Length: 164
Image (tube, rainbow, N blue to C red; front, side):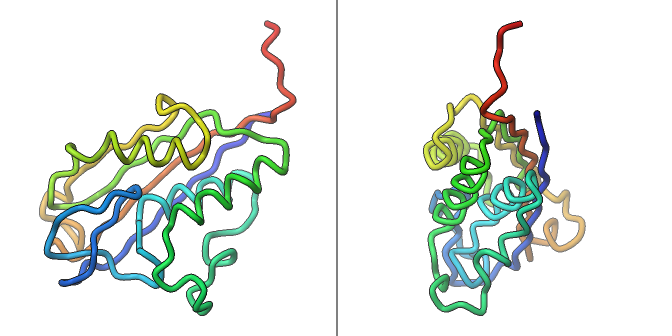
């Protein structure tokens, strides 16, 4: 059996905050505001994984009202979601994701993001797609006030055999 999950996240950009995307620290004047490290990409992927089996969302598992998660590394959230689907007898087939950010350019960091995600989920880097888009100077992303990410994940029951 296969299932699909979709996740999205958006954070305001604020001066003096670190900008962490896909587990990569990126030099920039503005970073994402949030309770944890505000890694918008990992949050979207985590929600997609949780959604693939109707296991709620990141806020249910890691509420911003819980001080344990203040400043937390979002790779922790991703690993937790992966353990839940593994416990349910599923594995990740692939992930497709998009980051919307006006600047800075993310192309130099995308391969490291893919590697970080693949390592955290114990899957091949070839199963992880990360794309970056600008906001074309439209809405909060395009005006440089926010960062947004979207992700889709396909999972498959571990009991599926490939004897075709």
